[in-house]
Image (cartoon, rainbow, N blue to C red; front, side, top):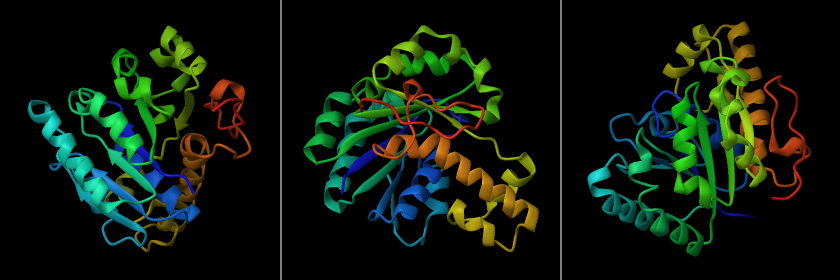
Length: 260
């Protein structure tokens, strides 16, 4: 059984980090591969830790990682707590501006994660602007990760029209073993309700707060999100990932990738 720490990154707010972190937690619970520890990196917006509070198989902690002025102190506190708690799968949901804390301390973070026996996974959430590309290119965590995936958020528009697709860095990312996936869009009417209902996304198909058609919509969204954006990162041997690590935005199932 492997051990991994997934850093859900993207540096900017509103690109889908919290949504992706929740879907990754759900995916690990579904696999039944040991307890999942969720680290909420923003004490002011602890949406992921609140959603999974009391959920079986998940423990949570809040560590303030929005502290560029005390980045080393924040990182020391985080990994002291991780070492104390342990766990097979850890998901760190970074706040906006997380690079100024975690990337700034990459020389401590990377060797610490590996010394604790974990692999370093990074999910970089891509928005429909140039900044997402520039920040990914500058991220030390992206450079040093054992596995990484660039996740294009369909909520921001057609992923194929994002600057990411035209960037030279995309080619470099894929050639270096990086993966690429798409986070499908959930209809806003349903998304508003989902944000208010705590618990696993994959359990919402039984929620009395959703009507039947909304439950079907959420169920399809979770299945597609796992297939297109989460499973490729975790599934080294799962059928499907080739295509240079690309998961097509036309919702085709992912294919097997050679290499990592």
